[in-house]
Image (cartoon, rainbow, N blue to C red; front, side, top):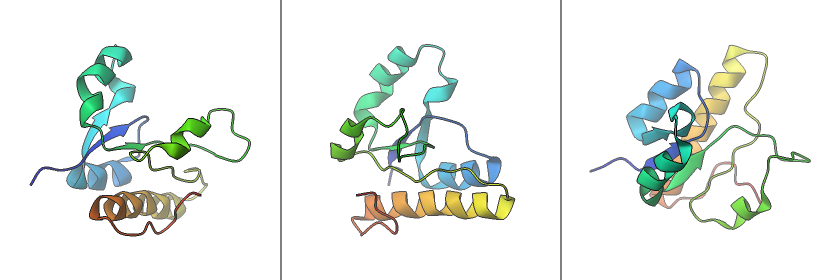
Length: 110
């Protein structure tokens, strides 16, 4: 069985990247020199987008993302401790895994 294809917008630390790579086919947009060509090639396969962002009052949040079925928004992924960052990465993976299994998300964004 093939892994779900996700679009990875930015880098993750190794402790998050390794489990992401094990569970998903992560297409790394941030590594592409020609992002438009990259999206044209991989976009039709993408079933979810993994990104790090802040939501409340964040100018980068485009409200159109909230209406897309293939977008999973995750709360801000910044903290001061490795333990907290690892827990946040686990939460991202748990949300993606639940999404692709058709289960309720542990932390849905409404």
